[in-house]
Image 1 (cartoon, rainbow, N blue to C red):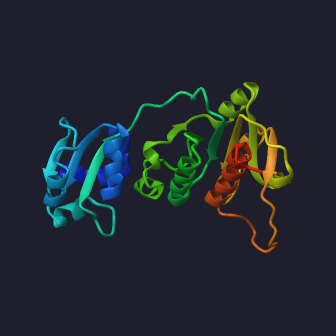
Image 2: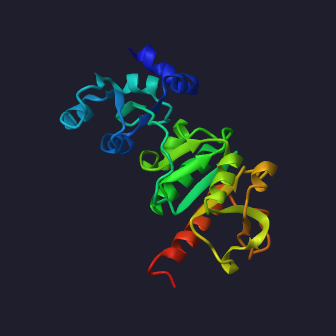
Image 3: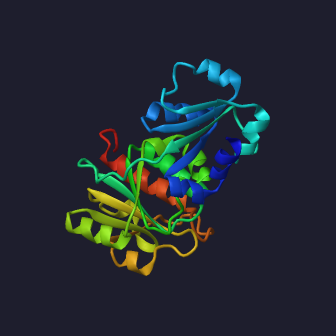
Length: 249
């Protein structure tokens, strides 16, 4: 059993079976509350005893030792419980989607997870990504999302086509650029799609051509070359959501 489950340490096996790995007490509790189908649970005896009535009846359950858990885990310090969870089906665009996030070739799992977590904080429930963006089911993304992976839907698509289609539907498509209009002095329209590019090269030419407006976050300090992609995304989300909030001035 452990040998079979340990194969899911590799993303290719997770991709083939359309599952992802969730580890640790907090994230596994989030998984149980999410409605996602939990396929397998491996946990220490004390965790299993304390969650005996919480686990779905149909999932496979195994009591394991700390040493066995280490054989499954990708974490430096495995934390009591490991789960194999089915990936959800792709979701259509939500009817009330006012602000969307789009990621063009983002590669760092930590950035992806942080963007998911920030979107969750601001109530943004959908991300759309180019196919070369890091998988949202990468274990490092799942960990960095702090449970947001269960509440924010991620769709991989032909991003330029998606942006052009939604621009025709009335969405303003904003791209984070170094040479754009000052974010704080720009009139921000909604519904809107906020596009963040690759950590090194920024937006691809074909995605850049799909923008309706280029925005820049002013470099007031004048020393740093650029902002971290997740930080830039967080500032954009804060500005867009803050301006529409009834408490915003």
